[in-house]
Length: 347
Image (tube, rainbow, N blue to C red; front, side, top):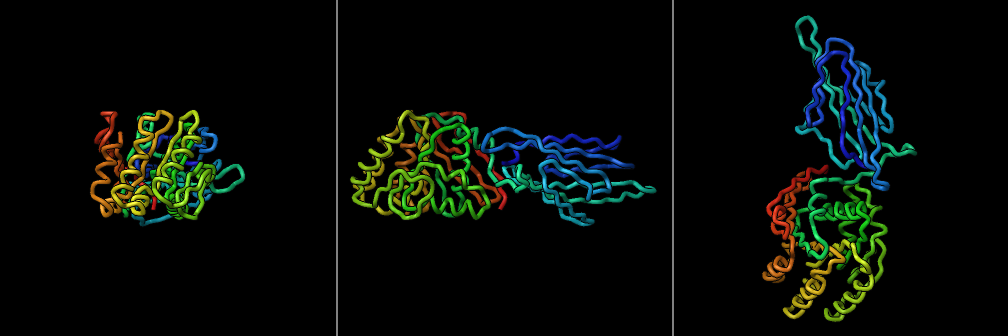
């Protein structure tokens, strides 16, 4: 499960309670107060929204209660509160800062309580962490079946996070997902997601067509050995065509840059580009070509330009882990072109 959105219901016995969007709650109080918080969480298996409550009384942090929560409280007289405070949409934990300011004989006394809330399932276990970015999902919603989407990244960014959000969105929409995995790229993406603490069980039932490599992730429905590129292409087109069936398929293509590295002659490059052309406009699928542009530019300077020309949408991933940026630099949907989305993530 993950946090979907947050609603604050506060009763402060006549005192003034101010909620800052960064999740720092400041209460100016002269007497007793009582606060009640209601979180709404989204179950990523059933996609049902469920409420989760938390209550707190002034001076009694040990009596804080939560339905479906594990609560850890720390009191601090001096603390540097991050700006913005670390609330990560899509996480199974939330850090809430409550600052109380009390006036006593003309002097103001400040106390800060730090609540670390972990969301629990029905068995009392900490819920797994997922990612949920409505702004990114809104871009996916604007794409049309038949498109080829080029996702460009460099060696220092995290395209694996965008893949994770893509698969999560596709599952929510009940689309079939077929991953083209070139030379174990899917395994390297999954390993990074595991290390980031994300729940990768959503990858277990993904259909996978592997070309080369030994590491199996998901449900492998076909494995094509690295061979003559024309033989590979013929086998791939036959296998994919028999799997796509009636359509509504989301098709991430991983490690295309590795395939170009193995097949780097001019003839082989044009054959690989031909695979993308073969399915362009096929309204049964949306293809997402994840490519490392650092690698592509070292193989042949024209490959990236050709891919950008073939693609109907081009998305560029930039930035570091804590502040990843997704930029749409080309789209057949005019309003999307030039759109930038900042994805603040927990390291």
